[in-house]
Every structure is written in C-alpha cells, then in structure tokens.
Amino acid sequence: MATATARGAIEAAEYPTRMFIDGSWCDALDGKTLRVINPADESVLAEVAYGTRTEADRAIAAAERAFPAWRALSVYDRAKILKQTAELMRARADKIARALTQEQGKPLTEARLEVLHAADTFEWFAEEGKRSYGRIIPPMKVAKRHYAIKHPVGVVGTITPWNFPAALPSRKIAPALAVGCTVVSRPAEQTPLTLILIFECLADAGIPPGVANLVIGPARPIADAFFEHPSIRKISFTGSTEVGKELIRRSADQVKRLSLELGGHAPLIVFPDADVHQVAQAAVIGKFRNNGQVCIAPSRFYVHEKISKDFTDAAVELARSLKIGNGLEPGVQVGPMFEARALEKTSALIEDARTKGGKVLTGGGRSKRFDRGYWFEPTVIREVNGEMKLMTEEPFAPVMPLLDFDKLDDVIAAANNTPYGLAAYVFTNDLTVATRMAEGLEAGVIGINDPVPATPQCPFGGMKESGMGRELGSEGLDAYLETKFVSVGLRQ
Image (cartoon, rainbow, N blue to C red; front, side):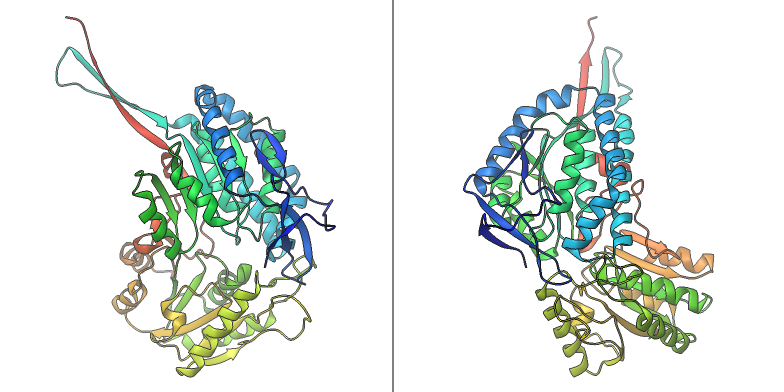
C-alpha cells in the first residue's frame, strides 16, 4: 500500500514525481511525499509529491483563472493540443506502459493496450469536440428567433481509481478539455505515475497554464475542496458504489453536476449454440484480465445446462494454464493483485463460498510461488448459490463462479437480480436470442459475443446503482456541456 512520508532518500529518476499546477511542476508545500509500491515484489517504486487541501485549492484557483481564455479559444485550436497529446502518448507508450505495469501490476501487453486506448480517447474527443452542435428551433411567432447553443460547464474535478490509471482519467480529461472546460485531476494514491506521464504529454503538447492540473493527495481533503469550492461546477468520479452514494449526498449543497461510473456485477451468459471452447477462452480472458480487477469484468457465469460440463472442463483447463508472474516478464498473462487488502478480500470471498457449499475446481488461494507481492491463483468455483458474498458483493477478484441455467427468461431474471447494472455479456449465434437478451438485460454496456466491448466512440456507463451518466462516445462530450436556449425578438 502507498504510504505518505517526509521526502527521503528514495527517488526514481526513471519517472517524474511531481504534481502539475498552473502550468508548473511542483512538490507539496510541506515537502511530503507518497511511496508508490510495486505490487509484484512490494518494493518502493518511487516517491511522488503528496499534497493537501492547499494544493487542491491552488489548482482550482488556477483552473478558474484559465477557464475564460480556454473557453474562448477556437475548438480547432483546442483539438490541436489534444491530438498532439495523443501522438505524444503513442510515441511514449512503452515508457508509460512500463510505469503502469510496475505500479499497478497488470501485464505489460495489457498496460500498453490501455495506454493506446487512452491516446485514442484523446484523439476521438479532439475531433468530436468540433461537433458539439447547437440547433435552430422554429418559432411560433414571426418576430422571434429561437436557438440552442452548447456552453462548457466550467471547472471540472476528476477522481479516478487505480485499476485503469491511463484509460479512466483520459475518459474524463479529454472530453472536458475538448469542449472548453478546465480540469483538476486526482489520481489514485496507488497509481499516480501513469497520470503524471500523461500530464507530461499534455504539457509538452502546449496546454496553457491552469487549463489542466494534477493534484496528488488524500481523498477526503481533495474531495472537500471539490465540493466546497463554488467554481468547481462538475465532478466526474469512477469508483465504488458506496463512495458514489456519498458524493451524491454531498453534491446537494451546491447542486453540483456529477458523472458517476460505479460498481458492477456483470453476468456472462452462454447459450448452447455457442462454440464451447471459443467461448470458454473468451470468458477466461474477460474474467482474468487485470486479475479480475475490472469494473465490467464478468462476475457470474451462467452456462446452459446442455453444455455446462464441457464449458466447465474447458474453463478450468484454461485458467490453470494462465502464466502468472511479474507483468514485465515476457508471456505473462496474470500479474499480482494491486495490494494486500485485495488479497485479503479475495481470500474471504473464497472462504465464504466454501462454507456455503461452493466447490473450488482450480486455484482458491494465494500463490506460493512468490516470496513477496500480492499473488492470488486464478480460481474457478462451482456449486454456487445466491447466499454467497460472491453473488451479492462486487468481487473485483480473479474468481470465476459457474452456474447452470435452462430457460432464457429465467436467466434474464437471475442476471438482473442485483442492484448493479454496468455490463453484461451474452454468447450465442441466434439473432433472436441475442436481441431478446440485449433488450431484456438491465445493463448499460452489453457485449454480444464480445468480452471486451469498451471503445472511445461508444457510450460507457451503468444503470441502477452502477452510476449516472455516460463516458465516451458523443454522450461523453455532452457530460461537460450545458445547453443554453436563446430567444431573440426582432424589430417590427
């Protein structure tokens, strides 16, 4: 786990370690730093500047000052900076991905794909920002003219978690900047290096002082600054449903706009006409990428009883064959979990399932191959029931619970029997079944024969307790815009 310290002897020349406020790289005023831990071996990877409410207030003030000029800048000029940022991210993808792997744990191949996805997000919104159109509205009286125009919401505060430290901030920063908002971003304490490197790209692309600010510090004081400062007009948060509900309550005082991408408990449903081995491979990839620490990762696997045994056998064999190791090593498919708490929670989920009748088919415990680090074996479990915490809490763990089903309506009901509604997956070659599932499942993202559906040009977000609003796609642009209605009376 990352820990705050006074600045000491540990320095990582390999990576930048400062915050970015009002166009300048800076340390914390009190000199405090935060140790970033490599989850593969628990070594100290770097010490980064660790600010307080003071740094957050400075960044908000800088963003407020910068907003009028940035809003007034041509959308084409803003787009040039965002596109140059994307190009720099691609040129530096190897370095950014290496930092991501070292601080977060995922394999280097996954990390690099994430960085490229983040770069694509910057480029997509650079272009989409040019299409934040208004409209002309026919008047009822000949002496009037009506039209609607878009206006940037203002200064935006962003809060992002540790599991996708490149992709998730980019989904917030890029659209906000594209439409003329200014930004203050807080990364997760465990994974600040990736976002520091992305901010280096923004700075080198020519972002004006105060337009984009990076503050690293404890969650509560920075959130307090976001909610209490009237110039913060919008907060975009990705994280747990529990925290999201607290943010909704806090937003009431100033009626702040929120975008919330929260927890998930995605079902993956396999029908008997699907190719069992191909689907098992896709399901294992979808489940165990980033060690199951993915908000849209499938968490409950409903397999038609006609193919249940074949699917189970294939999934167990594939899970056992996954190569576990340090994400920097060639061929590694599963890295460590991100911190000790994740290991403890996963162990508790497995123990709870065992005591309630669950049968572990492979995995089920901490890997004994490693002396240090946060390692858990990819786990497949059957004899699952609704009383288990695996089925009621967001697992965020490398655990694959398998259940059987027979009827389409029954599996829809089972899949929807959760307060979450972020993602769902269906594997079938029957168009009628696919259509009924797409229409019947209560989820904001549905992958039909697609275990990794997220892409910059398509909307992403959840239903029910999985969030409010959408990121990515044109909807992701709208999240940072206000609509103004203008009525003009003409002289007679």
